[in-house]
Image (tube, rainbow, N blue to C red; front, side):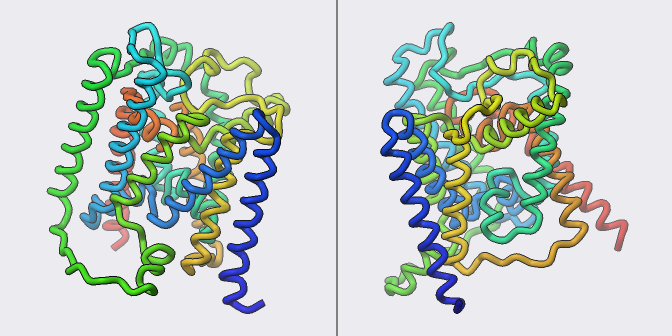
Length: 395
């Protein structure tokens, strides 16, 4: 088969398979429609992530080391758009944010030192493995040799997280508190405060970054327009708006965005079947976040979301000529497994990752999302500093 046939034929096959999956699930009625929509949302999310190179760790590292602001601005725009969308949904579902009620299923998680430790470990895991978990899923489709081991390591990390959950819950997490911003300042005040903080972070990001060099606007040819869509990295604002919109639609139709529930559920099911994971995990199933369960059904909303994410990423990466696997080295395996282990333990203990806790949490007005953001950022900064010190000693 020729290279053009692979480049255009394989994406076509994947798109046909995705379409067949969506249509087949949709014909199953009430039970199948959320599954079909999850697959469709996952495909949209994966396409946006891959085309915009949306990776929390990479964007943060680029800002710190290269003073490039576009990636972090994309994150901030996504947070702002999602916060606006969530507030609109909350107002329809729960008109009065009474102190004894929370919006249904929103990722408004517990705040404790456990969350801080877990997010810090997750940040280190990102630095070691080179990506957050959501980015590892789409980088599978780019031929990354680290991502398969990072995902495997994350599954093991989830298992370790289940083993450490009960002691942590009894000593720390059981005393955690829930802080939902609208409880204290209402929907309008919560949204305004969130947008003000995000605007301040955007201003700080632009101050730290290099001065932009805007190119003069020129009319695009058809070829250039196609390249802008399928090959060139999408603009930060475009990516942020799309991710925020997808997050809002996902919450409105199915559940808050998250990419770890299925992986964690598989680890929990296998660990329970093999008598490794405790049969009783105190308080876990009653907390908000990327919930893990003992799997009884093959298909789940989150599992299909991740399948759609990976499949669409294959399509966009192949069309853009960005599927570029290379030879695996021992360093790749170690980085993937060690970083993934920290990612998995951190995601299990924090009840989610950069998507499930940070993105969906801040969209919902939860303090837990902001705490995760700060502790994760500190973990990344510490890791980058340690890496610099080792590099200097080796010179």
